[in-house]
Amino acid sequence: MAMTVNGEVELAASRDLVWARLNDPEVLKSCIPGCEEFIKVDENQFQAVARLKIGPVSARFKARVMLSDIDPPNGYRIAAEGEGGLAGFAKGESTVVLLDHHGGTLLKYEAAAQIGGKLAQLGQRLISGTARKLAGEFFAKFAKAVEG
Image (tube, rainbow, N blue to C red):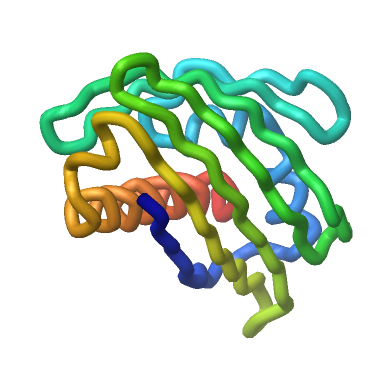
């Protein structure tokens, strides 16, 4: 099953500060819903572990996250692959763009993902709704992390 999520968030912080927070593993760990671990493996690669509940399916996902097309402080591309055991797998790519906006920063994102296993059996509406909810939770926490 494939899905897409996109949106934008206005942040009352400079692009440089937003960029720094987007590249701080501790900030990301505190903002990603269910994140138990977010470790920098090398300059552009991370390992993450997150526990998520999507409808009736709960799983602990282990993921590899890679950054590319890095253009500080304007944006980058994120590719991720995660395994959730019997629950299934998820993989996807996201583009993040930062723009100056009304004395702060406009963060635009667009993500495409594929899921398989039990998760794919839950249906497009439930998965898409959960993805939007998780993105909303992440950006609400991230806004607090950058705005103080």
